[in-house]
Image (tube, helix red, strand yellow):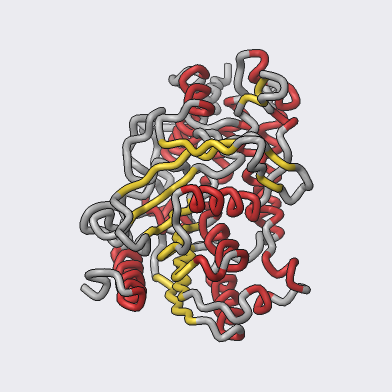
Length: 400
């Protein structure tokens, strides 16, 4: 008989997740009916809320604020213990005392994007009109929608101009959208491992993940919350497929090769014989502990729709015409999800618009996820860019 083991159910209950959706363990900005968020799909979303975290203190002239934009599966818990998983913040390699994004120097803000599931209004939130979870009745959102919501939060915090906007992957898309939509409000921008539009290959990978979620019998056309269940198997498979794209062949080979998992011989079954199989299953099962399946559909679709040049007659340079923002664009040699060629296209467009831009391609075999890992050259470049921008901004200690 052939042995088969499926992906295990998450250890964390749906109640633990749902509490964070509407009553997050972080700061929350509420926007009532008098302050709707105008979405690209033509819907006015109201009321809505944005969950966020801050680190450090805003200086007297409000000139030291940095907005961090999180990636697809990130959230506002960038440098603190996650309230659901108990794990450290997702960017503690970059954010913290003595690190490039130092809360002793900067006032750092990170918000959960609209459409997310960690406190900002999204498909997992309660629809005030019905008293039930939004599910697929939630309007489709875009990267520009996320940035408009962030701009409303920054207004609420009384900040006119951000010293820097920083982010990688989907976060990098938000960085670029900030500079295109609000050029006078962004003094400097650090855009990492991203692109000005999603490629056909990336859209295809996202569709694979969405189909995995929707094929789960527990999905129920997005209505699983009303039944008290969660399509964790489909979401776990989506995460497994996506996680492969975040790595590189060299990194997988170095970390796992073809080594067996806790055995010397194959089991001649469909159990996780290889270490890499066990690793992917762990990534899938741990992901569903903290993430909502419908939110995954919405956020991947938002990335798919992203195309800055589309609103500028297909000419990317027009999106940045006359911009005064200082840019630093960073790519990684082994990132095949957002390859260096796309970063170079962005840099060329910025050069054509006479923007101040520096560019770095960092040699590493860690793939797309390199921006989340311990890559000293990336830290050095980020620190130098922010210090240079700080000096130009007139921040105390900006040139240290």
